Image (cartoon, rainbow, N blue to C red; front, side, top):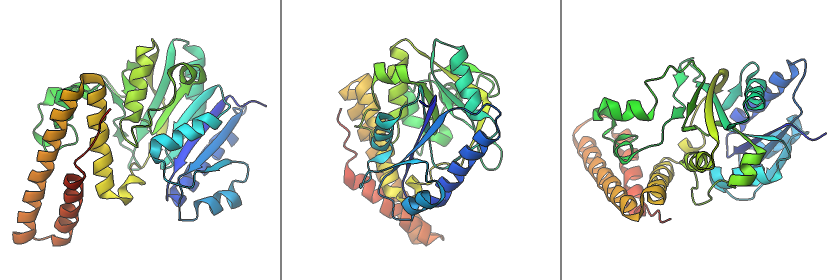
Length: 314
């Protein structure tokens, strides 16, 4: 039977979290009277923590693809998307848990709304709070303040606009994009828009993808009736310096792609200066204050970012 839904999960050294994610999918499907025809595809990016063995022992029916190398979030998802057979394609992070009938709710929403090309659920933390996952497209002001050392002093309207703070998070609504931790799209959208841009190793790839989807005339909706638990960042937290580098180079690449090379160059210079400033501050704190191990790890990470030069040509 051709699956209606293909779930694609890219995993890298998060064996325990992945196991919990897969168990939650199975539990969700088992608890439904009319279970969706579903295939689960796990793309393993050369994990060394027993992930492959765990899947073979506990989930033998899952379609496991071993890449043999770390292709990143984008490359891994593209591999999974090519293998998927479903009418709907669901990108899901391994550090998530399906709650209730979230899968069925999202699929039913696309069934009922033919102008909508992609949907995202409400993401909640393990503490029960809502994790902001709906967005408007970022502006250059957003790039300067969001996720930089200037964020605490950002003009409130800049981030409120970006995070859609003017709309309640418990109402279904049209948005510009949703986080890629849990993103459901139609196969027809994938076939017309194409795969994720492989130049984004990780971060901003779902932003770029959904911008292309909207440019093709599709709507993107946030559907809070579907809720998914998201722990967040567990793979990238293993390599802090590389996390900074990938995040910032992807941001630069996005703005160079849609705002021009000069905008990307200016953003790159600003970010490098920001990291130099943070390196100086952490060095002073390391000399004169406590938490020296923390300061040292930050100094090493910021140095690696500066040394990389944040290259991000489009």
